[in-house]
Length: 246
Image (spheres, rainbow, N blue to C red):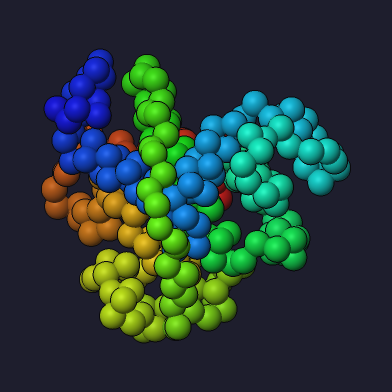
């Protein structure tokens, strides 16, 4: 068993532990639009969000927009980034396009939005795994020095999301491989494609926690300890509890 989950009460597949290790280390490295220290600050704020009194009041309100106030944050990020992190972490089912437009109008770029959401999603996935095993959450990684790359795909254009995305036909060599070969690119992948490295990293986790894009539609064999049907039953139940319309 990988050292990451050596103390887990059940055996964890080495490939899954390795994927989590890769993702966790990457959080501390310079990204595309945030540097390593900012990415670690986003991860820390993701953990802070569930205890935020403003977020707790908003969760109980018929509309989050009806509750004004200031987030109880760690103070390391601009308030608009805190708003994004807290809302994605605590109340994702009620995010709206007007709210998104407000975030962008407040000074966050489309690209920063995508990378922030991705870091939050990475942390939630790995922290949830730890809690499900009765383990402590991992210490946050040490930030690595260096600037973000500021790479924006030239082929990105308006599509079916709130932000521009890449259609498979518009990929350059630098974005090659972000979508699986042999099947259509899922919207959830395209919605992150303005920051291609986040597609690669997040779906590396997905392929090991869930199934790879080709395996999930291959019903001729089972790739996990439970069947396709059992996996989808669990996924559907979790999605319903989390108000995930996707």
